[in-house]
Image 1: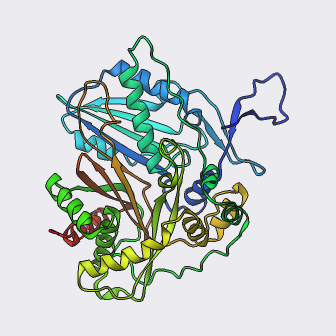
Image 2 (image 1 turned 135 degrees about the vertical axis):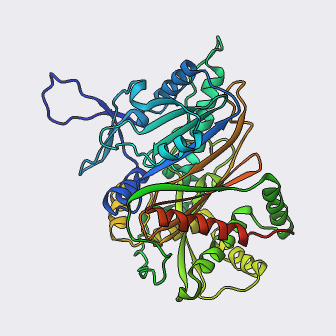
Image 3 (image 1 turned 180 degrees about the vertical axis):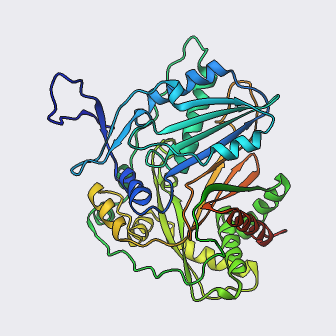
Length: 436
């Protein structure tokens, strides 16, 4: 990351704040939530503990983590020539709050839909919900700073600082500053040049012809979750191994089938799904532990009519996913959706003219329990989720912690829309295979 001083032509008597150039990912996310208004531009997580954190220790750990990632302190300046982050040091009261309650779930549900302010900063917010014997830590981060997988890496960083803070040899960790341009170095030269230079006209995605029975009103943002029992997830994992597929392919298959079940006879023709692809999987071991935006959406076309059998649908999904096993294919597919990840200017130009699919799927993956430890305080469960979308978009996020799988569906709508999302998640679980 390059730290600069912005010369704005103002009086030299004023102290000029250091700033950081915004990356193409940052600008693309800004275009989606501030210009296109598709979603609220945040990523979120909740960590459910079996005990209580030390209040002063977690505050100190949070401040140390912000020192390691100065963008979290910053304000976004959408400069016409080169947008940037202006560093503005925040105090703990601006980002951290705590409440003691007997209604933990209500407090978590109420806090997670909040948003950071890109222009005023800071770009992260915390709330520690204290129950009678157990704490829950909620975190909301501007998605311009990192994607959902990046938030997972931030959790590891925060827990490491909290655990090591009292060690006499403690030193604040310095997370690697890795941006999507460096992913190009994993490609052969010709493919690298094509990825950087080749422009592709975004696909003309037709308007959705059949949508969920939603109100069309974005009254209240909400997050609906459903957590599978451990035994149920273990059954799914065995099923995936037996079928020689990835768990995310099993979940995408169930998502597609649940959409068809929800639409019933209203489904007309094939529809498109944007599946989030984490590019960290293409990096060598050790280089994937980075806190930034390092994912791209990939287009998946669901057919007009599905096979009646889950296994046959899974085979179809597997065949189409196999075409995206190489990084170059992932990049070209993302360009077709309007994402040009290697140029700040093109990132915004493409997205402003692109129409994206209404259905979104994001398998955030496993949260590594061996890397997530807050001292001696045990963790009961964790889930990460993404932005809250505006209608008619429907997104599904999935995370796994210690064989506990949590689905989340995020939407702005009415109480009836909340019930519709709840029903949709029930349909999704019903579509999952029960045995190998």
